[in-house]
Length: 186
Image (cartoon, rainbow, N blue to C red; front, side, top):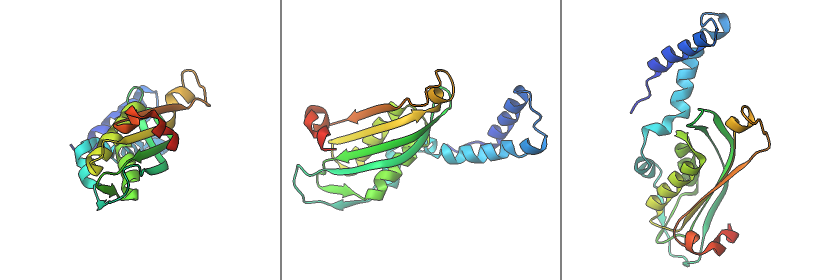
């Protein structure tokens, strides 16, 4: 599904008018176009299913290690937009851990998967599940943990305005769910 930039331009112009602004004033003339281009970029992930993302970033390598080995990629910077307010979820740090079966994924692909899954209207909880689902499909391992810490502008800039609030979510599958001690290794 392609993002309809012309419709976005039209509606952003309408929002500016509804706010009491003049969309023809110097500083706002190009705003509808800029917002449409930004939305096409930051919401790119809406155009892809989790399966398609797995195919895009599914480069793996044969692995013959121990069944207790673990791959951990920490502090992947991601941002997204909350589907409830279309507010920015920011300062998000994603950690992905998995226990390889017969193959491992290229490390940069872990970050690319997290980034693309974030480029949707999201909930932080769903973002973790989406990343986990994609990693499981690519690696063939059911043993996946995705931990996310993030700030939400719907809490920090409006409403309660609690700038220090940090949301932590975990999406656990396989051995991470049945053997809680594995989390202490992450």
